[in-house]
Image 1: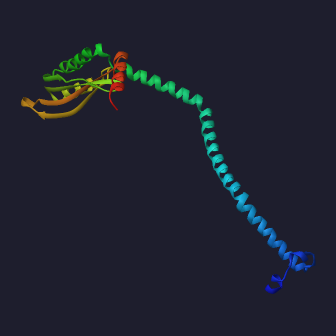
Image 2 (image 1 turned 135 degrees about the horizontal axis):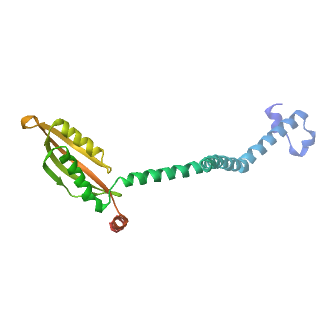
Image 3 (image 1 turned 180 degrees about the vertical axis):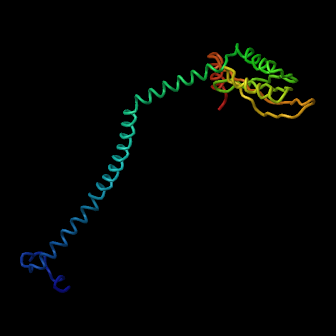
Length: 206
């Protein structure tokens, strides 16, 4: 079939067209219908299907996460209880406001008990954090090397949390040593102090 033959075709005489021409025309018509259907209808549905598939993937991920959380819920609860118990045990190692003087006295007595001479024992201003307060104490002691080492060990063994910082040792007269250090003691904030700090935080301008 030539191009002239196609140009000479008349739709009014469709029934008389050759079989090959009918098949070609039918194929072109089907292709046109499919193309039009895709452009005007199926394309939007395909895009919606892609969005739905993406949403399904996200929902499956959320479901898997929730499922794992549900499976491990009892383990999470037990872990929370363990953390609260550990926190409570640590909290007991911090004195309250009324016990701070006794703790400072314990640090002083630990040095005197080892025969050390305190040339300086000066508590500084308290620094308050979210849950606890910290008091640094500048100390300077004089004594034998082993006595100073024993003092440091005694401080570490106190029932309350006490830490030593900025340690500097230097020789003194008669074979003794000087030790300069900062002893940091800690206490927990009572309920009234915690509430007060939260209130102050709310009142501060953002």
